View 1 (tube, rainbow, N blue to C red):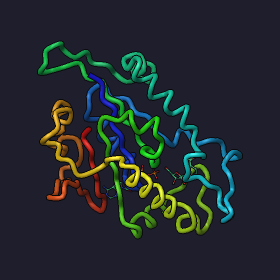
View 2 (view 1 turned 90 degrees about the horizontal axis):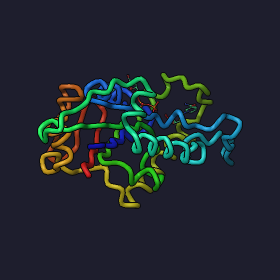
View 3 (view 1 turned 30 degrees about the vertical axis):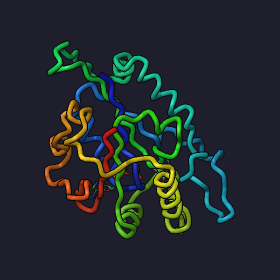
Length: 219
Ligand SMILES: Nc1ncnc2c1ncn2[C@@H]1O[C@H](COP(=O)(O)OP(=O)(O)OP(=O)(O)O)[C@@H](O)[C@H]1O
Ligand SMILES: NC(=O)c1ccc[n+]([C@@H]2O[C@H](CO)[C@@H](O)[C@H]2O)c1
């Protein structure tokens, strides 16, 4: 059985942190980071606002990203071995099936149709504006943020893409893992098995951890 899990959401929402937890805890688990598909700096357009437009789909080679995901789908075992992931053969017993997992982590996973339809599970991490801005101000990317980028470009693009995703009907939230067979097969009845112990599942169907809200869709 193959599963593709998306860890999407806002910049500095904790996607990499959660992804690193998941890949340690899950068997036969490969990872794809969307940030590895940024185009070279000289190909990033400068907007009318004067900022390089990093936080848009055009700044990413999404075709190459989808090809990478397809390469995993065609032969997960070969992909895992090529990427140094230890492969444990599962038994053919239904109770312990042969499971291969791909975790895809990134800030714009659910706005590109050829990618969005490949996920079996979608997570979306969100943090409030103040916390996001604070975290971002401590980060140093390969190309450092110029003054004003967060308010002038990063946050407005996050809001725009989130709205597009929601308007487009991409479901990232409010489904209970208790009712979904594919989540159960992965052992996701209690997500806390895989992520920090102080996560909790609230009545509205969202996970919380520290300031992070996790919306999860079990498709
Ligand atoms: N649950 C959490 N509670 C508090 N702080 C967190 C949590 N998860 C991550 N952080 C902190 O938030 C910052 C961003 O985390 P991380 O790099 O995982 O985010 P990200 O979503 O992958 O960011 P980006 O993709 O924009 O680079 C780090 O300083 C990390 O220590
Ligand atoms: N990784 C990079 O090359 C890079 C360069 C410039 C900006 N960023 C930022 O990364 C975030 C997604 O993780 C986006 O908000 C980009 O602004 C990344």
